[in-house]
Length: 123
Image (cartoon, rainbow, N blue to C red):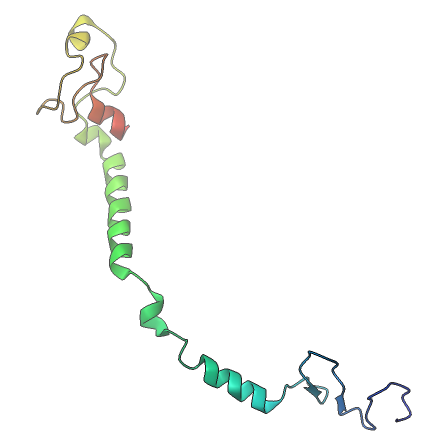
């Protein structure tokens, strides 16, 4: 045993006993055994998919981005696209158009109060 009083201490402090289950430390820099590092590098050599494989589904990303852009454009152009007022005053003329199916005047049809569904979706 050396003069430090610790079991397993070495005379220059160059290496110390790391205990059960730990990697041995070498020197004050804390480097691990080179054999362990080399074996770990060999084991992981085939596991890196590379930059092309990291982007899993680039087509799906483009489609999703296109969908988001289309929704943003539809929201921005709602006054141009939508055929009417999103919350019209319920007059007899509006109520007469209640529950109509899709047509050129109302592409999504109308609800039970005669309001245009496309206009309500866009707004």
